Length: 506
Ligand SMILES: [Ca+2]
Ligand SMILES: [Ca+2]
Ligand SMILES: [Zn+2]
Image (tube, rainbow, N blue to C red):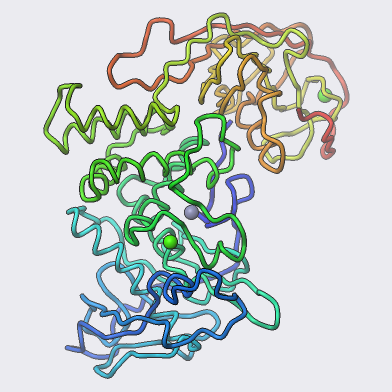
């Protein structure tokens, strides 16, 4: 069963989606003037206070200096004396509702200590992404105007909410009664605006369609921030304080680096794209990334992203021959990162020692009736993880198992017959390939089937395992699907309405 994010945050993983109480009202329909200025000179950071000052160790508790800020010009304003353009709107502010920057003809040169500076800084940075989309000719007409809250009431995070069509830029308290703001960090702003662009070019349903789709969304949001600023390091200021700066100049391996956490897992893809940006050239890689999102199928996994990127590159360059130097570069980079792969796990089967885990507790809402004894009982809706063992001496990337034969006395709720195995370590079972830490349960529930028992007795299931296939030079090989069987002895224990048992989880 899958994992569905509610919003697209800077730090929070799919397993614990941000459920914030922030409410951002609808955009103002009318401005406060007609024929107002459509441009405005502002003061803003060159990315963030650290990069803008040239002091990479500028203290987070320091008083930010106006002399470290740079001039900028807002263009394409709506001319209604509000901070609005075709794509973004900043007319409300959660912490500073009565201090809203508005272009009325005068200068907009605020000091970094003021809320207006951060409002203008975030509006400017978001508009840089608008300008990039214009440069590569992307049509974002499906995107309604996005609200920016530059001082959102969320600590240690920032996010894009598709349902509210809003960017929430939060804060971090850094000690000494000082607070830093995501609105001072252009990487965060473009990343969150990038989610809005991603969901417009693709769709929210595509970008929710698999565990790896969430990582694709994070990766491309990072890519937009990095390419706009021509800098491989994401968020020197906000993540610099919180920890977890992401650096696209590093070289992570797929799938060994995957942790089933969307931001971490997106990094190997961002690193691939960052290297391609250098070799293909920025204008080409930006355009191909955008077209890949437009063409991305559902469900979308890394294999789909790669094959779609390759197809988009063919269209972009107007070439088909695999010997084309740009197509060759693309294959080389995806191969070097491990994403180009054709896994062939002949005779994959459940582990001989521990073939299945029955998780019959109530720790997630899809489960019901479970009595937490690790045995499937009549009346229980439980997770069943088939603990497949990787028979090959190398890694396997994302493989998917589909229930193909369901015995009498078992029903499968919608979506319960699909299990995404996000990776396998060499010659290891899936349980032994799971990450340590907070995403272990998410990875387990994503790989598990969801079944309900209605009668007791021995039940034999069949399923097909489809290994990862990502090679644009060939069609899916005939050996690409493997059948395996597993059995469960359904008992008749008493159902319960709430219990949990962490020992049931691998
Ligand atoms: Ca940066
Ligand atoms: Ca049970
Ligand atoms: Zn994000």
